[in-house]
Every structure is written in structure tokens, then in C-alpha cells.
Image (cartoon, each protein chain N blue to C red):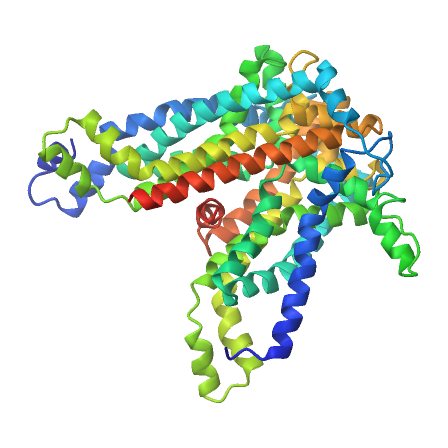
Length: 264
Length: 299
């Protein structure tokens, strides 16, 4: 260690403060959800589970959660399939204007989402897709595809194609080769793409605000309206559950990935 | 498949042959079509159409753009948007640089902790974090309680630009730290020792050797944060106020409240032009997808 001790201590202290500041918001939400009164005051003075009860008894909350889950699962499936296929085309294919196709497929990542939101809103008014699950899935999939393409492309680039040739020389047909050789090796990339896709859709607020209807309304939209309208700690309960869900997903993902590394 | 293509080109696959092959689609290319179709329908066409309408509604021409730049309130909003994005970016860099640097010099176990501290907020719902900042920053919130106890007194931290900046900085910091970290991780620290061995004081060695080597990460992080900050909607809408709106809020207001697609489209076009210009400038320096892929690979 050639670091001077003084500066390093200062660095550690500064970074600890940054760390607290990064985590503070999450740490606040959890106790807030167990408060016993309708207020934003922190820390809560008394405790109760009433906001969780409220969440599961008020249709506007639990139906929003179900809608969000339904849309996010559909988006995950569609975006993972389409994105993975496109990644194969971009890595292994050759066709005219490949760079342009690549740029177009990644563009939803770069264009500010508020622009996508008004654009989709205007188009959906004409196509009558506003307030439909189909419309949500379509728009969210476009936003999620770039993440799948990026993660799968990264796996494919480091993939040794001689393994496929070896499998085929040993008599495997192309489908078996894909299922038994290619897919397992690129699976970490596919899975992290799927995770990105799920969270992209599950979290998405801006497009959702524009294409929602009273019947099809996602959880982030319900939270947004709740924040702007009233002081309702139900949102803290919703937030806590989202935190738990995300953490569970990420932990499962990390564990699956570690196991994957053990296998190979 | 690839073999047939190669045979068709002839055995001496010259450079022109290779170029011709690149123009002739192979079977893999078909796999891009479904994704391409979806992105065209649900993204490219709608965006193109809203931009087109900015030149045609209510009358053909550049009226919407002229009106935007001739309305002082709008120009103020445009300037405020760039200022806020710049402040957020600078603060993120000032906080992110030492943080990413510490990640590269601590033991592996601590590195995982530091990484987790960045990734947890990164994966946490934007709405959850924005709501949490409302709780923290409100006039009777925890932050004000602490400031009051310290003798600073209560400050107005919400429904103004301060609140927006604090919230946005926290939300965007991971986008600065991750590219910085992935660049710094690749810097050979022996170069620092070499510089010191040649007589440079540690600070000079750091500034003249380490900082230049970390610049690709800085560029990637700064661009990501600035671009994301320019288009931010949710946090400014909830932590700010209509009196100090940003461009994204103006766009939403034009379209959702006034149903004015022409002028909303023009504002969107201005925002998009700024974003793409920045992106084009920077992608000459670093490959943007690298900055993004570092987000997924470290989880």
C-alpha cells in the first residue's frame, strides 16, 4: 500500500457519506410504510399494518400491481425473444445498412423517454391502442429491446463458434446445437437482458402516464397520481413491496449466475 | 450457410468480394426483422410523425420553432434545462470520481459492498426514489430536522430547483460511477509507481498519469448523465414546481393539457436535437454501448 494514509482516510469518509446519501431514500421508505397515521412525518410515531391492508383492499392499488406484473411479464418474454434474435442477426448476419439497423434498434435507449411518450400517445390516439394492455406491451417492448440486444450481443461476441462446429461434427443438428451448446453459453447475457426488460417495463412511468386509462393503469402511474393528489402512506407500502420484489429478483439472478459459473 | 457464401465469392475472396458479400443478406439477417418491425411501429414511426407534425400543425412551416425561440419564458426554460443538467452532471462527477476510485483500491469484499451501494439505487424504481425524496426534503422532513438541529435552520428544499437537483443527482449518480469504475479498473496502477519512481510527487503522478487514463470513463459518464438529465421528467415534475419547469415538463404540458401536438413536437425536436448532437460528439470519443454494457455485467 503506497497510498498516503491521510488522504485515503478522507476518501473513505467522503465515500461513506456518498453511500449513506445513495441509500437514504430506500431506508426511509420502509419505516414510512408501517406508520399509524396519514402523514409524511418521519420517523413515524406509531406503528401499524393498515397501509398494507389498504393496498390489498383498494382495487386502484392491487389492480395496478396486477396490471403492472402482467405487462412486465409479457414485455420480458417478447423483448427477450426479439432482442436475442436481433442480437444474432447483428453479430452473425451481414446485410446492407447494418450499422443503421443497429442504431435504430438501440435508439429507444438514447431518445428521451418524454419524447417517446408524446409520440406514442399521438400515434395511439389514432390506432386506438391507448389504455390497452397490447399498447403498453408494444411501447414497453420497444424501450426494453435495446437492453436485451446489448447484453446478448456482449455474450455472443465472446462466444467461440468452433464449439458449434464441433457439436455439428459430432452429429448434432442445428436445433440441438443451439439448444445444447449455444443457448447455455449465452444464457447469462439473455437472462440479464430479460431482467433489464422486466424492470424497464415494471418501472416505466412517463409513457404509461400518457397511454393509461382508468381500466389499464400500472403501479408507477398509480403512485405518481397518489403523490400529486394526497398524502397517502399506501404508496410507502407499495414502495416497500417493490423494493422487496426487486431485491428478490436480483438475488435470484445473482445466485443463478453464480451457479452457472460453477457449472462451467 | 457461411460456407456457401464464401464459395460463391470465389476462392480468392478479395476485398471487393468481401464488400459484395456484406451487401448480400445471409440467413442470420432475417432474425433482426421482428425486432426491427416492432421498433419501427412502436417507436420510430411515432417519433418521426410527431416531429413531422411540428412542421405542419397548425400551419406548414417553421412557425412552431419561431414561436418557441421568440417566447422569452420558453427560452428561459430551455436555458434552465441545460443549466440543471450541467449542474447535476458536475455534482455527479465530483461525487462519482472519488467513489469509483475508492472502488479500485479497496479489498475485493469492500469492492462488492461499494458496488452494491451503487447498484441498489440503480435497480430501485424511479417512483420509489422520487417519493422518498419528497419525504426527506419536505419542510418538516428529516433533512430539515437535521439542518435545524445543526443550527442552519429550515430551508426550502422542495418545489424548487434545489430539490430537483438533489433528487436527480442521487438518481443519476450510478450512471456516472459505473462507467468510471469500468475504465479505472483497467488502468495499470504500476504506471503511477513508475511516475513516482521517476520523481513525480504522488499528486502530480495522479494528475498527469491517472486522470488522463480515466478520461474515457469520464466522457462516458458525463454524456450519459447529461443526456439523461436533459430529458428527465418524473423527478422534476414531482420535486420541482411549475414556476421553474424544465423542457420535458413543458413538452408534457403542451401535449397532454393543451393537445398542442405541433408546438409540443417542436419542443421535443429541440430536446432531441440537443441530445443527439451531444451523443454524436461523444460517440466519436467512446463507444456508447460500452458504457451501457458495463451496467449489466457487474450485477
